[in-house]
Image 1 (cartoon, helix red, strand yellow):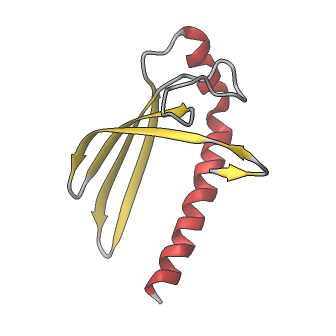
Image 2 (cartoon, one colour):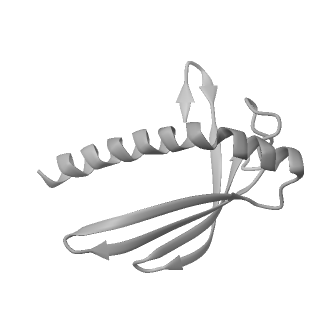
Length: 108
């Protein structure tokens, strides 16, 4: 992502793809050469998060569940994630709402 001359890179390494119900990956902040780096805005943020997304059919709809778990994190990193949980839920909710709007637009 690029904004105002700044760049942010997110590295994703898929570790499991089970169609159509499960995706698992290691998620990190990276430099432009894809090396894992510390989160520049949160010193104690874990370098790697284990991300799991599951999809489950529920009638005519699909339920999606996303979990982030610090991967090989120290105590300070675990505390940082714990303190940020409420804000992350709001951010993910806003992102999912945007995705829902995009999907409605694409299906029109």
